[in-house]
Length: 612
Image (cartoon, rainbow, N blue to C red; front, side, top):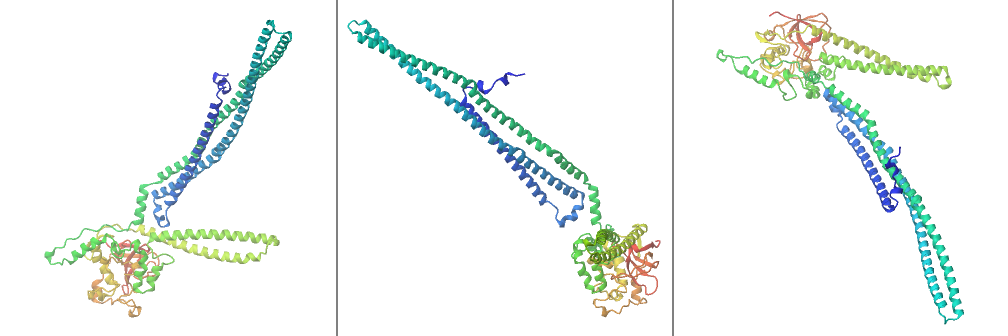
């Protein structure tokens, strides 16, 4: 059904608005170009936004030095978020590229086509108008000629009538006026006919001009303008579709960010912080009251207070509670060992193959990492060997492709490397199995933190921050018993003698605990040491011996390779002198012989405390 709007068009309604339609179509093309510039600038903004997003992600990417912190769930989520933002930037680039290819390019082509078509139609309109104008001028000239001829004819008729009525004029004069009248009449009729013909032609041309010629031009201009308007609508729709097409991926990116947020677990991060920084020590015990009225010196109380104050904070040299070494000071640890000038300490600094110098949990983790690394290498070498075997088989089947002997050398080298890796893997798997058994054994035989008497005083296991009691009652006395006894007799402290109030550890790792392999004197030169412990019968030695806390049984054999440790055979029984202080080592003393005293791994022994 045709509506009134559809029946109305420029050709019929605007037949006399040629100039206005020309100006309107020009403005329409300018507007189309303006919209094209808008889309182009929009695409540029999308490109710039994507580039800035990528630059933002690159700026906040974790550095290698911060990789350890990205084990926390919040940091992992942030890393995932940055990856999703990077993908989001890619979608903005897609929007810009599609706008450039599907909108801007087509829009520029459309502007060019419409401009050329408009020019063509306007030229046609000018031609039609010029033709009509020419015809109107011809009509005007013919009309003027007819008007002049008509007046001349009337004047000739008037002269003839006057001459015919005048009796005084000769017949010749009358005939002359008659002939002039006939001539003027003929000229008038000719001009009249010419005027009639030009008028008919002009009317016909004008009818054709305003009913078909110019309306057709206006119709073409109308179609161009409607095409322009329709394409603007299509371009807007295309722009929306381009953006809408990336919405699913953008939504996936946003969903990925939400999933990353769901990954964040404050409890897991809290446990990770505990696992990373837990020292294993307990808060200090209460400071004991010392009654000065009974004649006791207050030096011990002052030392206790001083030690407690500094035991919970970082002290000079990077030491913390119980003299353990902080992570910041670990790099300088080798320098601490070198003060003794012993190969045993160097072995600790360099690390042993079975990592037995590490605490059990750390040893297990390191061994598991090593086993996984070796398994990966074995898989790679196995794949390489299989490839060489296949190539050798191909060469044997078709010698034209190559000499099988050229593969033999590579195959032997690969087999040798594989055997070596498999042997190393088996060895480290054995170390790992031993470490796991040691941890399980240690867990099964763990003791509670019940108070006990040490040399007549109450003492808690792993009291951690109670530096005063720990130093005065446990470590200091025990250290004195395994070092040169004359040091305590002379009330002196030589270099290398454990000084807990300076934060030094008595574990074998610190090199401060000593055994039959330790250096008792000040000088680190082994030539100055005769290799014997103090005389067991010495009164000073007997006076400084700590009473055993219990007995322990060796679950595995242990070879002493570090300063302060002693070897033990499987199933050997020893006296328990001091329990593990959180560093993975326990101080023991042999039951027989020279009463040799030193440290052994806690995970290698099963302990039984004496009843209090």
